[in-house]
Image 1: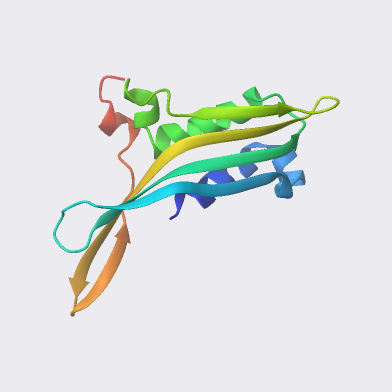
Image 2: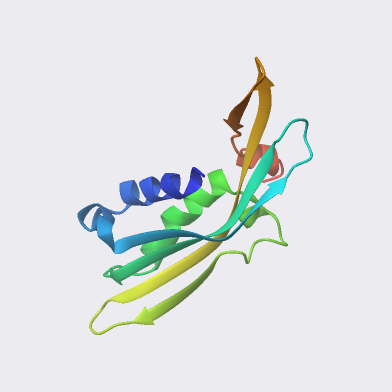
Amino acid sequence: MRKPESLRAHLTAALPWLQDNPDRLLVFADEGGIVSTEEAGLSFEWRYSLNLIFTDLALHPDEIAVPLLAWVRENQSELMGNPERRDGIRFEADVLAGDKIDLSIKLPLTERVGVHLQAGKPVVEHYAEPTWAEAFPDG
């Protein structure tokens, strides 16, 4: 699985608070499954709920949402463009003393993995997601 680390890196680059407090972001892949894609070979898809937990968050949640949605648009675009999946990003917040919160954001992710034989040995290839323009040509 590559998306959890990709999203962590994206959020860290976008948020100076997270650069200064990297231990304040916990990342979990929950409720996962491996699903056969029925392609030739042993190709499959990782499906899981990514749980981002920001502890003692000293930012407004909007500051998390904007870079998160920018990443989603490029890496799991159907969560924005498919009406049946648009409500897939969920959150819970615990309001703490002062101006801090603990924020948990869950989003359903998939990762397609191709497996083919080369010289009799399996070769694994992680496929890129379709771009926003490819997935939603009308906007």
